[in-house]
Length: 203
Image (cartoon, rainbow, N blue to C red; front, side, top):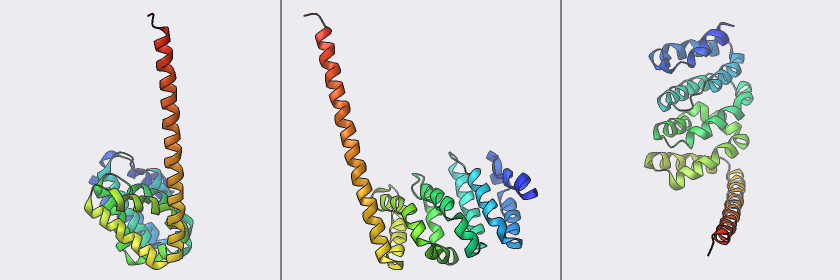
């Protein structure tokens, strides 16, 4: 009750940086003493995840890594989907510090071990962000880190990586075709409107 009603809501204030180190320590103590609390802790972090404050987002990513380091395999399986959906957003962030900090999770050997055991669920969530970063992220370090993580997945399970990459490429192709069709439709509407306008103007 203390964790859910007091500690987790303390992540919400804008000035959390002033006491975040102590707050993170308290939260990880709960994880250490009771592994089953990992799921409510992770969901609490995601609930209060900052949307527009990149410095605060970097703090949350650091705390998330500390929590994952104390997470056992069964508890990790319960939070894979929400955690890596959020991490995919962070990897794709235009703010290089947020993207870089998210990608640094793959430098943690224990976290990588957990990721490897759930790679079939995780790769489809993060691959689109990794591919976009590797191709066109404005920050060179983020692009290189994304390439390294992508390579790690390919070496870990080449058939899974190829299937996931092809599925993503097909999805991107469909999206680009749909976008082109929408643009053509709007152009036709604009042409009809322009012709109608001309017809109403007296000669």
